[in-house]
Image (tube, rainbow, N blue to C red; front, side, top):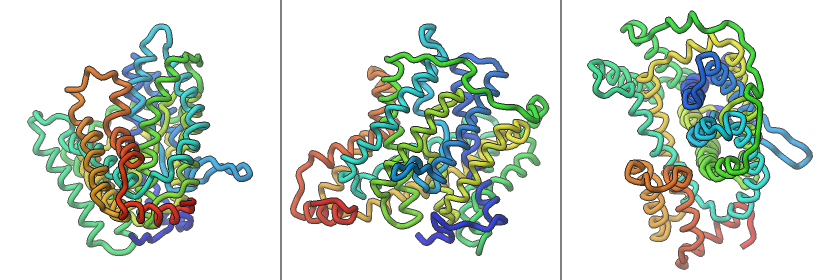
Length: 449
């Protein structure tokens, strides 16, 4: 896929700003929802909920800047220097709420566990990547990308009906969602030049205006939002519970696998290759550091935002300077809640329509990465069984309630598919054709064979 702007290209300011806003529009609502779910689950009042949301945006800013610009200390690198925007990890909402409502742990212990688990991830996550990277073949990484798209596409569909399929207005909101999806595809396929790069942003703006005209947007909450507010770090203090830290660490296996998938999707779209060992290791360090900072700022541990990969592919802009600018915009919104409220009111059907397209692009990216490898009988077995375990398990979670929640979170969905594919790629016997391709792959990533 040919990009108008590559990873290290600096985009003119007049173009960079709308491209950055496009990322912010797509990811913003998900960032707010994650923070809100954490606050509501912990039983916080409206003022503390507003603080959690503010902190979530600030953490998104800091963590995304770490990924986009990177931190170098000699040869030691934190952050991938790739066009990645991060957001709070939904996977960790349930355990943090569980800790927050435990009188022996509380919110102080929940955020302490997030910090402790992320410190361990920072140290050992890259080591895991270093020793297992030879097994992250295009079949495995492509399958992870495919799983990311398949696991999230239902979220887009739920938003398309505003989570209310029995509502009397369901056909109206569903029609708006379809309109936004079709408009995004039409602009992407038929528009020329820079206009084509803004297909997501333009579709969302037009859909937003349409919803306002139809009376589907209530601006009354704007009056209660403050113009300026400063996020308060460690509002509830910090404490450290070993059991809680271990639980967060286990769930971090899921975020690590999702990071691999998202990073692969971004790099494959930007440069038609799979990420290097160095890139994956620095990505994990970047998200781990962002998660540590999140704990100090009352926020969810972070993970690369999947929507980011879809927007990048559709816009044709893979510049990390654009995602860095998007991070700065998130930081500004963290201090000006009234401005942030405008984006918070983006209607679900508008967001659902464009996310349907974006997640579809991620699915196709997964297929393209898989095709970079050799589709032998062994490879097809890995792909088929991994998808069945991960995605099948995710859709059937209501029937798997006998499995502990933490184990279920790791063994289904994206992480379930990724772990299954990785294990099968390690243990399944290889034919001569598989061995020949494996030698070629190891040479391509600079490893001894």
